Image (tube, rainbow, N blue to C red; front, side, top):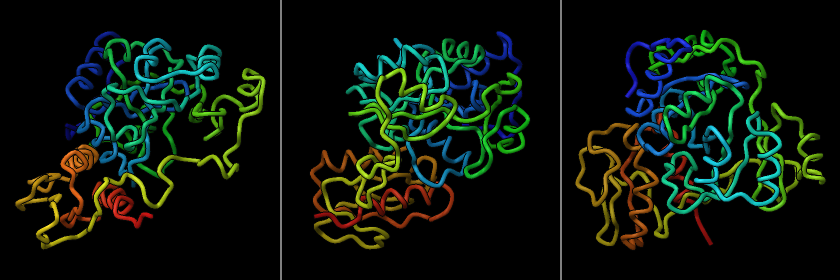
Amino acid sequence: MTSPEMRRLSPDAAGLDAAAAILRGGGLVSFPTETVYGLGADACDDRAVAGIYAAKARPSFNPLIVHLPELTAAQEYCDFNDDALRLATAFWPGALTLVLPLKQGAGISKLVTAGLDTLAVRVPDHALAQDLLRRFGGPVAAPSANPSGRVSPTSADHVAAGLAGRIDAVLDGGDCTVGVESTIVSCIGQPALLRAGGIPAEALSACLGAPLLLPADPAVPIAPGQLAAHYAPQGRVRLNATQVEDDEVLLGFGPVEAALNLSPSGDLTEAASRLFACLHTLDAMGAAKIAVSPIPDHGLGAAINDRLRRAAAPRD
């Protein structure tokens, strides 16, 4: 859904309306927060979210942070325990992201959660971001608006330098005030620090009245999706299949006859947007053995293959 030219939108009603319209149309808009500029897409639209990965050349489907205008909006998508409510009440809006249980039927794209049953959410403390979120009226997935592995952007010029021609627009809100990403805390069980950021861990611990678990604790994974066998359907998966056995169900790619096809036209963005949904469909079909067509290992194909390798990893 991206256009050849990246529009630079002014920080006024016309610019905000245009940005919200792009998001509703499945496009990509960079917008300022107090931390860094985010690259936003409709968090409920698989193809729009896949566009984030394509634009950033993000190497794998890491879970994305969803931005919402207020706590009550976040509660529509996540379950908050007492610790999460305490932190949200004290530090939102602000540079704090909370990882929480995802509500059933929330409608969030599985590309946002990387197929997990948790969701990372935050309420940004930036007037322009708040205005955009309210105008759009839904959850916005937004990692930092930079090519993967590059320095995070703190101005519209930084966004343009890295993503011009890859996204639809940037909403120019001037320089970010914090300039480092949000602190991420998991509130699944005892609160744990997953990423240091704009709010010091000491302030969070003081609010809770207890220290945060630290990433070095082996009982707490630093990031989701670290296990070798992950994102796996119930059936056994065989990759790079050019022929299909009688007892196998084919997950195709490109112009092949298949029970399910990630993208008959060979479009990697479409394939990325359909990956998790197809894995769930295979489960619903009761597929015991799954063959997967070869998928190019470049661009979003690298991310798709990463997830398929995890799905195919040996299990006990």
